[in-house]
Amino acid sequence: MSPEQSRKLINRLTIVSTIIIILLCIYWYNLGIFSSQAAMEAYLADKQIMGPVIFILIQIVQVVIPIIPGGVSLLAGVVFFGAVPGFIYNYIGIVVGSLINFFLARYYGKSFILHIVSEESLEKYTKWTKNQKKFNWFFAICILAPVAPDDLLCLLAGLTEMKPWTYFWIIVLCKPWTIAAYSLGLVYGAKWLIRLMGK
Image (cartoon, rainbow, N blue to C red; front, top):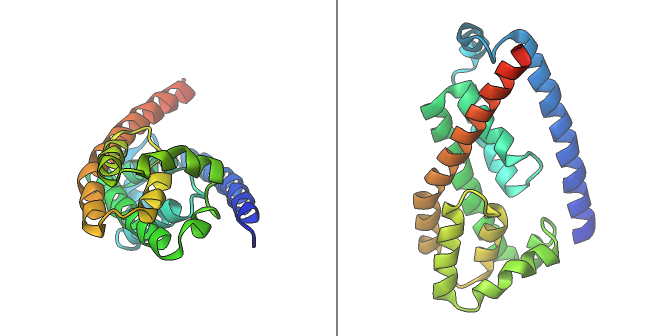
């Protein structure tokens, strides 16, 4: 399969996953789990062990193969498991997925990355890699910033001479702030939307 075909397949799977997520949200909304804590707890009662495990695996997959909108999975973690557990599960999944991305890019090279992102998108940030020390700082700032294309930059980092331990500590120390910022924003936005729909 050519890189272009792979990217088209990922785009189609993203559309499919988005439709499935919308249908699930309608189903969960009709169950009342978004408006009732008791309904939420009853729904999750038999999923206390496998629920978090499956969620973390889904989060890892969506980082490596971006077929699920990242914001949606972040919101799901907090809504279903609560602020602190949801944050922890999001954090574990995203960190593990980001580490996998780095080593996949380092092992398979640019040809692998082009199956996920276009060459134009990759080249936009390649200019920052000419000086490794500057790229390390640029990468850390981008991972810390909520609006940066984290997954693409993680793949790009794998093509540079960045040391694995440097990458590891940047991801481990900077990711929590991004996840927290996204989660809070999405949760408050979702609550506002639910109140609006309830009127």
